[in-house]
Length: 442
Length: 168
Image 1 (cartoon, each protein chain N blue to C red):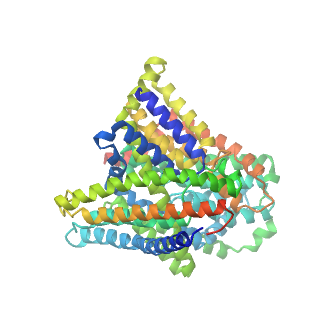
Image 2 (image 1 turned 135 degrees about the vertical axis):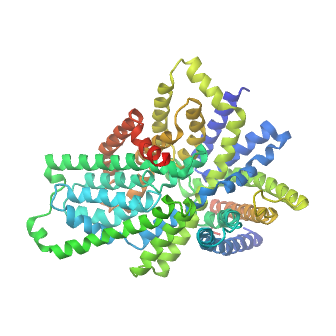
Image 3 (image 1 turned 45 degrees about the vertical axis):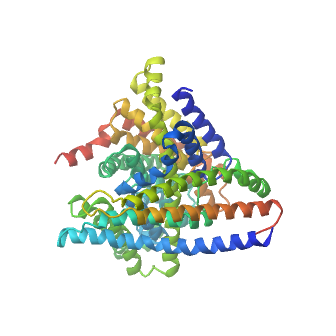
């Protein structure tokens, strides 16, 4: 069999097994070890799967993964974000669609304090959602805002997705995170602009607070609430300043972040045993889930490496099909999006990256820049039906009057905005590269 | 179901629960080690043992925690079809596919045991300043993978019992 055929049959076998609904790490690992045994069984193929665990261990920044997951759970379980939300609520209330805009700001701040979109989603659905519905915001607008906003969590640093990408692409995490900052803020800005325009044209989508209601909040109260916004900045600075100035390394800064969030919860008197136990248990569960899938996916990727499937793919695209490298890149993002609609997001993260990243490298593109494209595409995939982590989370957390159909419909305009952002970053790589290039030049 | 299977399932679940709860707290040990690392680098002489210790702890965290995370059912499944099946169909498919999962874990364990035997025989050390021995961490990995196999087998029995309309 040719390498292409082996690679294709591995991929096919894996898809069939994944659709059986069995735990993913086992199915990916099974295909990998069977292929390894068949290809190199006489030359240490049985060892290939285990050898990946040493590779996994040697990759130092992986330690940030449980730290950021823990941090996210502490933040959402201890409900530290309640005050934050009230702050945005009061300050943005008078603007049309102001509460929705405030929710996006809230999500940006939460994104800067944790690495996954789950925490943002949980906070959005428990704090912002009921409040927005009570104020007669359009329910499609509300669910769309929360899902779109929480997806920023994986683009704005610290980002767990970029940590995983960094491992596969062998790129520095710090640079990748910096590259995510401006595109993340740009996307948040585009969301806000969209909400503002929509609510300006159709005020019933997001009514502004009435003047009586605004009068109830005194100036002193407004200023007091502003201090709630200091908390995320304090946590973010505690985490980032020692890192940027070079006192601590990335991993250590993630520890500081986790401890700072814990400390904040203790100071606010919200750190009960239940919160602590839930956060620790969930961190173990989610970290194990990620790490076991990565372990299996690394074995899968190692076989693709061994087969030189990337060279074959490159030859197929560039020579046999006569495409140029930009065609291939855009084609890759399109298939990525397509796969995102039916593949589980975690599967995409670990299966698509080992396949695409070497190809992107072979085509001569910048892997830091591609990391941002990759993350935005994952964000979109998080939100597109029928599979979408955020869609399911939203369904699980939203009140019953919001149907799955509403949730599906609500994301359409936001996905449009995200595709636009993706196109902008493809067309103008400087959006992503300016910050890391400037800071790393010094 | 024979009595010994029930006993096996109960024993495995209790064992993995305890090991998993232990692993859960390794996270905080890891935090302590990393803090000491940055503290000693800025204030004292840099500690040479922290990086490797941290890596070993992380590996132990997810190897020993793996079986407990299976108990918590946190492993991701692709549930496009799976979620629409009846509990019986789910159990039926799971009983077959989990054999593939156990096969993967078996190959993993084979590699782990072989690698551990090598590490003990030749006194393998990790490269670097501190040069720790590799056999302890590899032994932990063997234990973790074994616990995963035990837990998967327990899950297999539970699904089998479900097919007979019983709960284990």
